[in-house]
Amino acid sequence: MKSKLLIPVLALGVFGIITTEMGIIGVLPQISEKFGISTSSAGWLVGVFALVVAVTGPFMTLVASGINRKTVLLVAIAVFAVSNLVYATTSSFEMMFAFRIIPAVAHPVFFAVALASAVRLVPPEKAAAATTKVFAGVTVGFAFGVPLTSYLAENFSVSTALVFGAGINVLAFVGIMALLPSSPVTQQMSYGAQVGILRRPRVWLTVISVTFVFAAMFSVYGYFAEYLGDVTGMSGSWISAMLLVFGVVMIFGNFVFGAMLGKSVVRTVVAFPVLCVVVYVLIYLVGPHFVPMIVGVLIWGSRWGRWSAVGFSDNWERVNWFGPECCSRYSG
Image 1 (cartoon, rainbow, N blue to C red):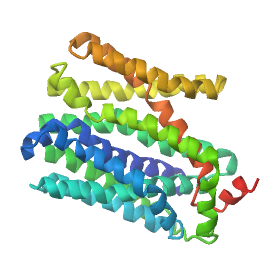
Image 2: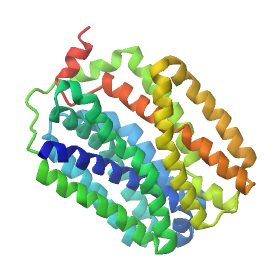
Image 3: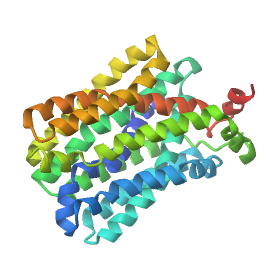
């Protein structure tokens, strides 16, 4: 019974982390106004988080691979909860900036351990389904966490919106504390063996390709709210609605691209960045026009979700630093 409840709790933790990470996007105009800074300066709250994840992710995951998994999850989710409270209460942009760096260090570790824990809760034949359910927290975070954060900021206050993120993380913390048994690492790979996985060219090809595509995706999405407000002329309520529409359509896009992947993985993955270029040109052209921009958001959202799942799962299969099965995967 506990294992059945724990997977949704892990998904809730992922949802809370994505809401913390990306919810800032929906409130950048309010943050810019609150601190009296430019939008580009406020945008660094998004950029620094992504940069820290990219730089520290592999090393922090490696370091944490020998620590009790329950401890890692609890510490990581607690860091996100505290960071949200700091965002909600601080009057210093520098303090807020610093607390974007701290949770970013814990971000990749939580994902890796949460997925590894989900795999160990179910029989081998259900491992893929378990990781998919946990990873669904990402999609739901985009679909509901980000727009809800924007809505709360627009209709109540920025602090209310950020406390919402803290509350989600606290709920996940309590759930993990109550449901996840202590999970000490009993068969840790040597650091040399783990790092040796990175000698494989296919791993780096996947990492580099996903990095470039993600950079293109988030460099545009990071200014979603500001673009709709300044270029399209949408109000805060409309921006919240567009964020929600984007997320919901992204869920639908997962199913569409999933069907395409079933027919041809290579063609689908190659086609994705090409489609992104087309969509970004479209967004640029229709940006000043209200109704066409709504259509553009629908098309844009439909292209997002599946690449995230494909890219993450592809790397997860190649670099799993939280289980001895990693060795057998690469022994050949």
